[in-house]
Image (cartoon, rainbow, N blue to C red; front, side, top):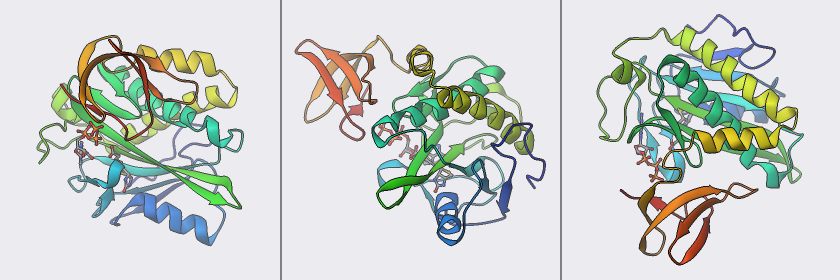
Length: 250
Ligand SMILES: Nc1ncnc2c1ncn2[C@@H]1O[C@H](COP(=O)(O)OP(=O)(O)OP(=O)(O)O)[C@@H](O)[C@H]1O
Ligand SMILES: O=C(O)CCCC[C@@H]1SC[C@@H]2NC(=O)N[C@@H]21
């Protein structure tokens, strides 16, 4: 399973397949502790038994149905304050791949992928530090591909959206090509183009909705700051939020 490398320069050229594991992010982190790992290496499993989501949530996925993998990057060209750009390129790579199949996928800030009001993909990015510098970034991606039932009402899969079943190896290879394309754009320093593309694909951009920080309020997403803070215009003025500081309501 997952033996054919992607047609890319480096991303997905090496794939480590584990039939089962607790979390591919944890497995990747253990590998990095033991020996150097080539940039672009993917750790993938068919059966993730203790998947980790953001905010300490669990990531639940039916064995053999979805893409559940971790990508190892070495973005040493980025300083710590530029880290949000990784969220941008990873989200755009995924959304471009999905939109190449069916239009309508969007990025929910910072890096969830939605189809209409449902979540199809989650991303968990973790930095591995060495002497206070980012040595590696591990990018965990859970993409719902062929699963047809979810315990979570908000979850959806590609198969549910399109009515088709997908070959996971082909989906992985294609996704790698889109991810690499975006990552190379970041390496070339094309930040304005990336930011614009991110805003063009952003869930709820420019629409009025309810949000919650300490209180529930109505607002409209108008952009992201240089370092990736979410900017919401309200009748009291512009508010800016870091991860976990704001909740999307209806
Ligand atoms: N396979 C899956 N697909 C989609 N969501 C899943 C899946 N497995 C677990 N979940 C969880 O279902 C919930 C649905 O996502 P939701 O967007 O509501 O939460 P979130 O990512 O915490 O975002 P927020 O709370 O900012 O709206 C999350 O807790 C998510 O981690
Ligand atoms: O909460 C989220 O939206 C993030 C979900 C990230 C899930 C992926 S699945 C592969 C990798 N391994 C993990 O334990 N989590 C990530």
